[in-house]
Image (cartoon, rainbow, N blue to C red; front, side):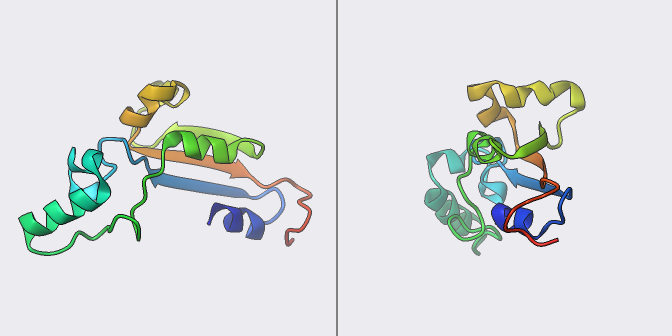
Length: 124
């Protein structure tokens, strides 16, 4: 999806990606503060048992176990303008630079990418 967003952006345009980090406190969305640490399928089943209906976000369909590391690795080699934890005050953005800490304290990662002015293979 991110590759497609960059492909269709105009040269010099910005792409903002934002996603919930799986190991963060809200990684399982409505499936809990701790249940997703056991596993996405466990969290879904527990939510259904507790609430009598499936969760809005279903692990493997609309909820994925993406890490902060994976987002930063994706941005490597691209023109990354900013990477910060959404919902954190600016003074706490340093968390994204600390490998293990960032996975558990970042609830949502924001990546701001700029498409190169002359991108081969892209559309103007």
